[in-house]
Image 1 (cartoon, rainbow, N blue to C red):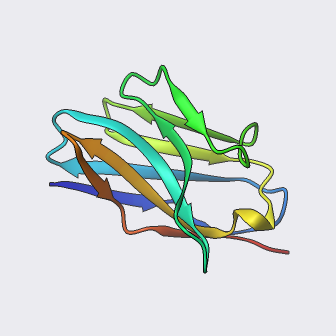
Image 2: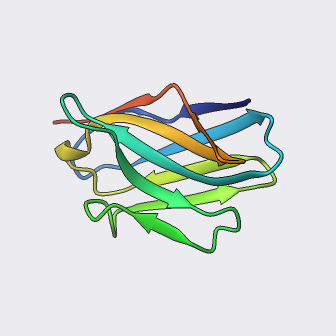
Image 3: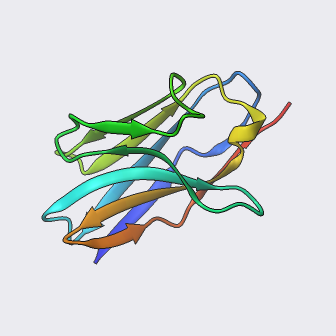
Length: 116
C-alpha cells in the first residue's frame, strides 16, 4: 500500500500562486509515474499534470500549460505542483496520484479556491 498526503492548498486571489506538495510513504519501492488530478463540483476528475519516475517526461492539461509546473524529488519521495497565474476556473479539489506495479493510489485531496 502507498499513502499519499497533500499539502499547500488554500484560498488565493486570481493571478496569485500556490505550491502543492505530495509526500509518499508505505510501499514506495518501485513507485513509478506520479501526478496531480483535480475535480470540481459536477465535473469528472481530470488530469492536471503527470511526471515519470526520472522526471524526463511530463504532460499537462491544455488549460494549465504555461502556468503550472510539476516536479518530483525521488530522494524525498515527494511530488510538487507550482501553480501560477491562478484563475477562478482552477478552483477544485486537487488529488495526488501514484502508480506502482499497475496499481493506482490517491491522496485524500486538498481544496484550492481561487476567488477575489
